[in-house]
Length: 112
Ligand code: HEC
Image (cartoon, rainbow, N blue to C red; front, side):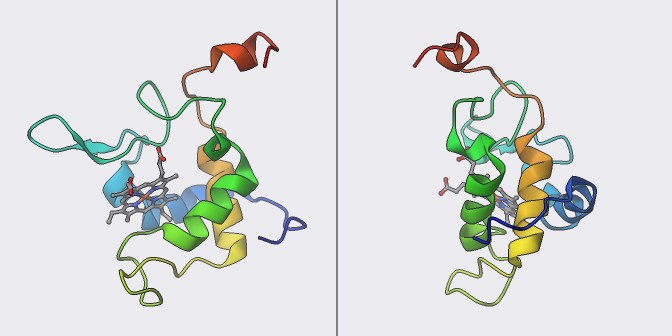
């Protein structure tokens, strides 16, 4: 992942709505199966990963989504993942990484 890229969260929001919201929801809420298990994990708000997760950091999240998301959204990898450029991934990641989510206590306290 090219760490010199400048994140553009406004463009990222547009791309998120076009490529990600179908599964993860316009409000990042994810989607559950009939039995209550997660079908598509939430990306922000109450049930999402917390502020201590690497996924809450723009470039870590960008690297993950460039290789793994959207599922079945492209034609590059065997399962159809991929198709995001580095800039797309950084823009989208910067948008969702900075949404509200549960606070990781040790981080909030400044602890380990
Ligand atoms: C077709 C449905 C689908 C689309 C479209 C999709 N995802 Fe996902 N996403 C999933 C599924 C399913 C998982 C869970 C994968 C797993 O646990 O192995 C997931 C996992 C994730 C995770 C990890 C969440 C966590 O708590 O660890 C992130 C971040 C993510 N997706 C971001 C995105 C972004 C950003 C996009 C758009 C570029 C996107 N996804 C598009 C289905 C989708």
